[in-house]
Length: 147
Image 1 (cartoon, rainbow, N blue to C red):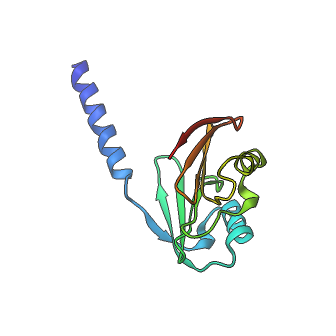
Image 2 (image 1 turned 60 degrees about the vertical axis):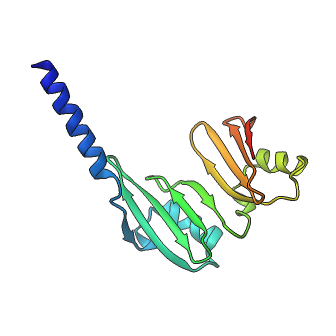
């Protein structure tokens, strides 16, 4: 009997997770959390919005904003940015931590702008315009370089 309940619970969990996937729905910028709205106004007010979507999760939602120049900004449910990717330009220097900017400036890649930056609780990752990816730990020590 325990096996039956365990199997049923696992089946229900799998169905719940699969139903939560790909439920993106279009939203307007004014539906984003205030923190996200302020971030976009501060750093991307000169760009034209293509679309914004909300991705509902089991707890909260995540958001993705895409501009016509293919700039993408992802936000967590609390409105804090989690990644910024620019196709043809550098990410705003004001969002790059000083330690990362200093590392790039002193490296052999100093002439390569940062086109993508991602952050989470444990790591930061950047991608330079030439495709080189550099991963930092939470103390901004390099832990991986991938070309």
